[in-house]
Image (cartoon, rainbow, N blue to C red; front, side, top):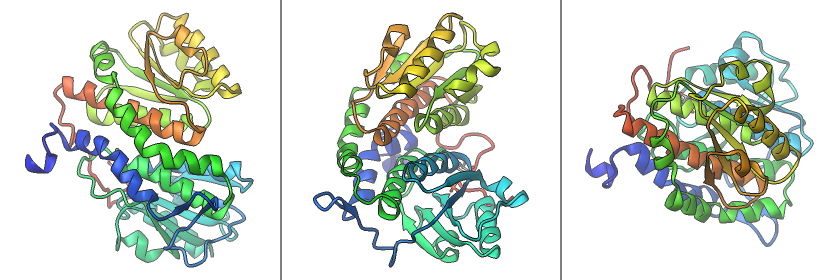
Length: 355
Ligand code: G6P
């Protein structure tokens, strides 16, 4: 097992570092940048859905929330559902393409939701890492994320590859000609490498080992990243963490914010979303909470932050992936300093085959 870790202390850290390679594998041969098109060989004929419903669990659900936004941006109605809730209260699915996002391809809740959708006459598509998995056999279409094997129970590189593959899927089926997004995807592996190489997340994590709790906030595509940052922290540190849509903080959770609850705020770009997130950060700063900003430096969030975890300026879609890398490293280093069982957290399994 030690050799398998290639000198890293944990598989999770190795897998975080493998993300540039995983992303290159995901993109290889699928993007024609000159032509501004995406080719997914697995799809004989790309489905042209009039609506998309995503079903997924855990980290994959966060990827699904991100994917739904990409389709909405392209003018195709799209929603993400927790797979376990889809089954208990399935929405009409006949006209929709129902997409199961599952790295293992074996999660019982997700398989059930897809079977339910199929029973209601919907076409189904699997977005998975595992060739030959149950989901790949049961769905009408499949897209592989090509992340390579992931040993750490807490998903890291498979999440990054899911986000990249969702971009390819959305570009192939909805808005094939977005050259800006294609260019950003091409540069993503090397930018992820740069974020890993320069990250100071270990030093920042060190300062908050005694925190009472951690809050993660973001808007738009950074909202699922905030949820994922909190989930990662919970899974591997056993500390209490919550992710919120930045605008929701003031509607309740703000009551929990104190000088002992760091708020990790993701603000990228200099648009309305970033400006509003900065406004929310001012509210927590006024309550003396430490603020850790994950930012590309385009907004003035740094003025209100105690620490900055920087990412390069890029397209909003790829900014979310880069921000997530900083959150992975923050969670990892917190867990490492606390001496946790990072690759096999208590009570958790890599793939859950019961409902
Ligand atoms: C388990 C794992 C999570 C994972 C979820 C969904 O709960 O511990 O890390 O996100 O299953 O897994 P899937 O294979 O469907 O992506």
